[in-house]
Length: 204
Image 1: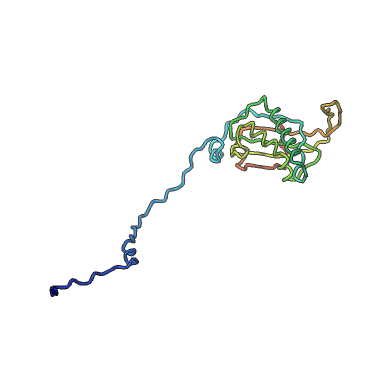
Image 2: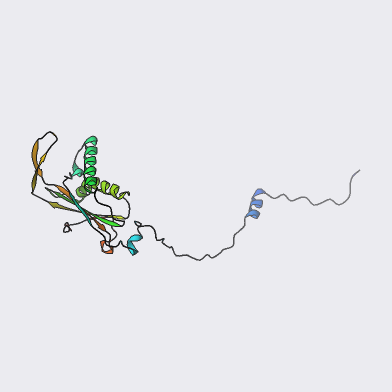
């Protein structure tokens, strides 16, 4: 029997794009206060330590090591020979500093290369790689530690010395040496991690 009652209206089918539009909620805009960055006090050796709290003046560690620092920048050297030379330089520096105690960081380390000839700037920096590694080991920190400020200088000498090898042979050579001065950092030293000085300051 045919139902002649009221026919319900057809059901509206929404597309998936319309349903997605209904689900989009626009968040209300909230104004947040802008906070100024703050710096933590940090430990001795952090970059912030150099702007507010210099190390109190203390004892100065000064040693001279009879060592020839070769101009390795333009030098062709076998890797094994370079490794032996570096070990010899590190052992000589650590032996000279064995009786001394490193000062607290921040500190300034002055390295003066004394040799027959002067080197250019990049040659001077390359020649002190071994001593810098030795000094960082003495401080028990990485050589990139911001608490260490490296000052480099060089001098020439015409003095000669007589040296003997392990089998008794003697020979004359230039009296090359490395002068090391370690002292507390002061605000007048600035914050540069590395400085190449025109002339070496007077020995303490």
